[in-house]
Structure formats: structure tokens, C-alpha cells
Amino acid sequence: MGKRDNRVAYMNPIAMARSRGPSQSAGPTIQDYLNRPRPTWEEVKEQLEKKKKGSRALAEFEEKMNENWKKELEKHREKLLGGNESSSKKKEVNILSLLKYS
Image (tube, rainbow, N blue to C red; front, side, top):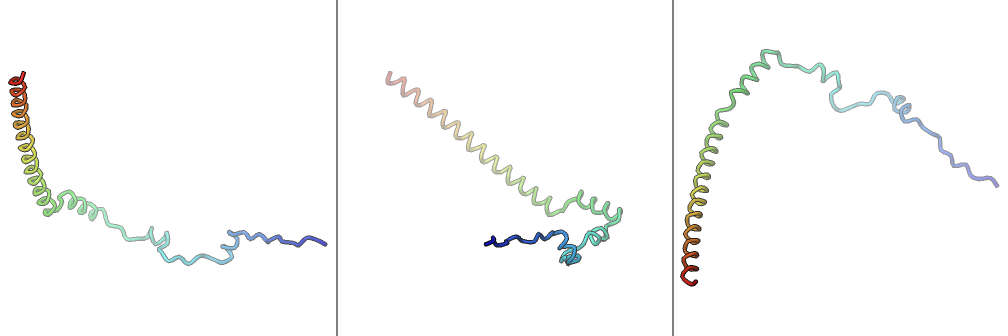
């Protein structure tokens, strides 16, 4: 009794892909990408000028945020300065009370 032959034929995947022919891709080809319309140098310069100028709305928004930030800083400073004064007074009171009892 002989053993069963369970060898499988090797299929070269590259050769099989070539035999099927070129694949149908859904996206643009490299040629399409290279032949795409490009802006002229003058158009590029105009776009750069527009970017340098920036938008008016953005400038207004930044000014408003700066104002809000300054207000927040002032409030925070007042809190800290006010807190320091009260804490220094508390320390003085504590020191005086310690001196009374000693």
C-alpha cells in the first residue's frame, strides 16, 4: 500500500496576476496625477499675498480673545494680591495671639 499523494501545485502569484492583465483601479492613475492642472506662478504669488494679509474676521477674533485674556489676568492678579494681603494679616494675628499666650 502506497501513501496518498497530497502535493499541491505551486502557483506563482506574480505570473498569475500578469496573466489576468492590468487591474482595473477605481482611482486616478499616475499619469492623471502628473497631468493635473497646476496654477501659474502669478496665481501662486496672489495666493501667498492673500495668506499674508489674513482674514479680517480672524484678526477681530484674536483681538477679542486678547482682551478677554487681559481681563482674566487682571482678575487673577487681584485674587492673588488680595489673597496675599489677607494671608499676611492672618499671620500677623497668629503671631500676636502666640505672643499674648507666651
